[in-house]
Length: 123
Image 1 (cartoon, rainbow, N blue to C red):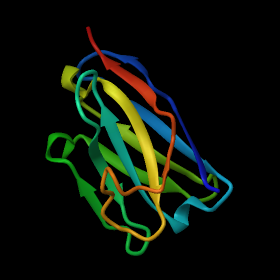
Image 2: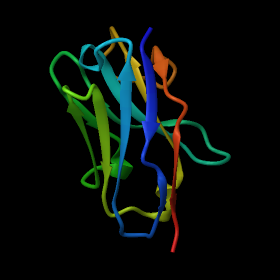
Image 3: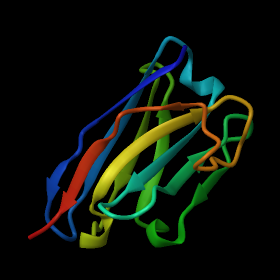
Image 4: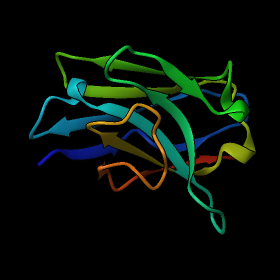
């Protein structure tokens, strides 16, 4: 069974940058479509970025377009979320998730989830 673990969250000032990582174990993460999701207090979980496993196509949520990017390191079996120009509204717990058959990262359709890492954007 694929296991996912996020790391790298923390406190950052508005306008700052942060890179969080999702390390896969048990299976090769490159075989899966991987998505980053976030959930702010009192809000529903939402998709942030999605990278399809078959063609590498990337989907962005409008709120993070031009600020966030996703990348894979095959050797480390890791997927990264690079977040630039962070805003207070980006404050949330960030989760990575993987889907073996799909390519669009539906929130309710992912097969495996990590436990999340908190990101707090505050002066």
